[in-house]
Image (cartoon, rainbow, N blue to C red; front, side, top):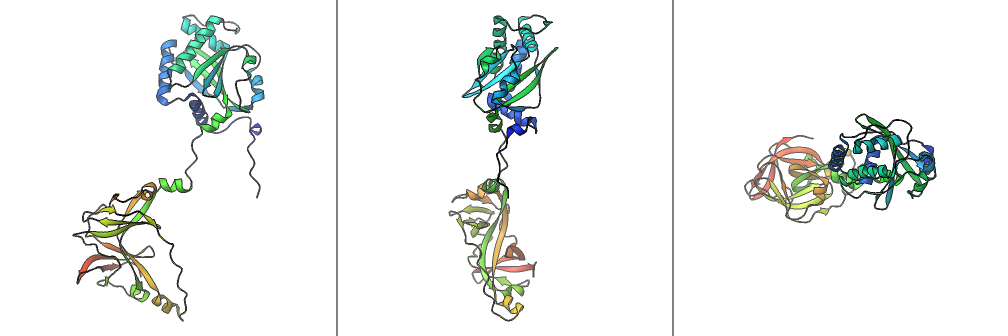
Length: 363
């Protein structure tokens, strides 16, 4: 077997997979919720006269030393964003930045070659960004607005940086933007992995049996069971009129309980974990049939079954109430090894409660 090796990002120039993961990363960086994003969009619409539309491109992950190559050396609007100890960088196409400023100032679209923003236009761009950030859920700050890429070399501490390109459209205005953020944010915002082990058990529904009696019967008696026979089991004291003692059993987990005539099951003690099934007796008889007839078979009487989430079964405590879903007085199941052997009804024979067989299901 080959040993697992850490994944090398330099072997993959572009991060494949759903863009949703990247969107989660950006949202985690910004601390944004759906409601916060709606407020931010509305705030920009009021300031700019139209709601911007953003189309994300494929994210790339590059070494931190390559950030300077990604940005280039030409002057461009660069906004340094900060949240806690993390930093992000928003790089805007100069044409897009100038168009946004023109929208706020009521000017028309500027034609010609891109140019650096004036100090006043830097202030207007900062206003646009602050309007967006302050309308959100909070936590993200505008640390600076720069135009010299050389002055943002030290923004990132991570060895790898994610680059997310986007096309921003605002009415007739359209331009490119790039968000650069720590690669660790991409993983911090990843959806949790599927539940495993006990966490998975807690989420799944589990079947629990409501036992009212349990006892050993000779194999020969089990094989000869017929309608009309009455089976007496240890602890069987439930009646349709008064209810009685029971156990809620799910796997090896068992909780003592009391059954009420209306079918409510109230846990009366702390659940315990039972021992595994004992090993089969050492067979010493001559024939297979004789061996089976000589075995003591455990027969269990169940009044019904309930389905509960694993976490609820694990959290059972005295006083917990479980609804059986029907009153007492209905059929009782007799099971052997978890398999249905026969159905019957509760009867009182000289003061002792038993199960009178009405139907034999398995032989």
